Image (cartoon, one colour):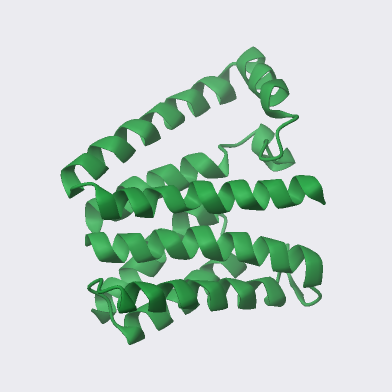
Length: 194
């Protein structure tokens, strides 16, 4: 249980870094930063997944860390890599405020969905639960409303539908990692509504 809490906190804090960076840095610097970091992570993933000894070494290096690799990440890219690529792509293709909201939805919503789903998830949909998805939607909605009240160029309808779509995408058994699909698809929907 302690390891799971550590993992959720790591993902929550780490996941909030990209949208905060996007709020602080100019767009060009944000793109350079996340483009560089995402490229480094992709290069490491290519090395790790093609050279068995590198993969084994990284697995052992992070095995004792609460935010270490999930079992399914032994043979596929880790969620962090997908999220960094999504961060770069959302800032590249969408307005800053939409990208910030979409990335906050993914970071906060995913952490809440995992925490609530593991503890209270009874109604299963594949590997996920409706209770976890409800927590995802509620937390993403709160974040969206805070961003609207803070003066970002968003509106109530866009953040409400964006949060709902983000929660739905996270729940559905889409074969592409939800760290990539949630921010991008919710950003598309919010852009269309704005």
